[in-house]
Length: 368
Image (cartoon, rainbow, N blue to C red):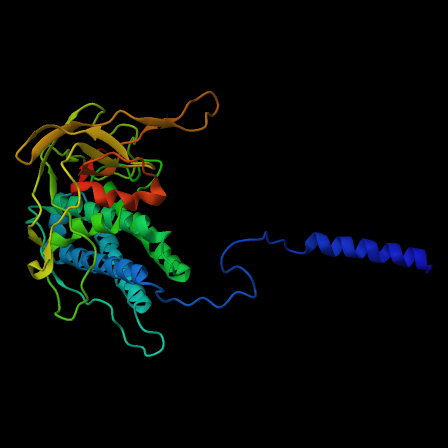
């Protein structure tokens, strides 16, 4: 074989080998063979306080699912249109929460000593559910704020390995929330984008249902805002259903929404050891947390802790397909609302900046 032919052969061989060498674009975090092995630990106080809050959320969900299984019998579930398979699924969701709590506890454990500084389960207080339907409605709301509460801080965690564990648990919780919606007769998903809220917003919603905790549980550092209630909140009355026309919400743009809220300084949380507080001035707007950016409407008819607003008429469009223009109302599904003193422009990544402007809330508005 001549030297020229041999040279061409090696050029050909090199080109073939190069064609099959996997190509990895530059960038990314922890994707290189030279990257340090992932450490599934917290790296900052922000990490610790965020994950400890998420752990307390997992605890109440675990207790709530078990409570439903103990509180209601087979006949109660059947009256609500739920089958033994549905009851079995609820039991499985309780098992999921046990796994989630275990994973988050490990994130809050000192890797060098094996000592856990994580919160322990507490005693919880729930509304007096008259039937399975009301229990399902409450469970749907609890999983909703649990899901959104993690979305709000997940991308801000210093520990990316810890964020991955949370991601894999919270996407399971999102599926749970969809199941509860179906059991309400609502569409499993009536929106295009899920919404993140701040830790303080999630803690404000969670705290009233924690009655007492072990004395050595670490204090939850997040703010408790004054409570907000929607007095004409829509309620789903349909029978359980897998499918639903998600484009037909329970509410319509422009309809009045009536609000009542507390003044700061009320006790809340376990052992009444937390106080509601706000850094905001006088309430002038209602913030709507639903699908991407925060939307605002004017707060009107204000008198002695009551007021009203109207559901915003705002939509966005997707890519047309086969002659069809797709669009959706921004306010749909289980939506968060809060009273604010100003209306700053906020996007999903910097939603935490709303905290300084919240007068009261959030509350969950059942738009669809």
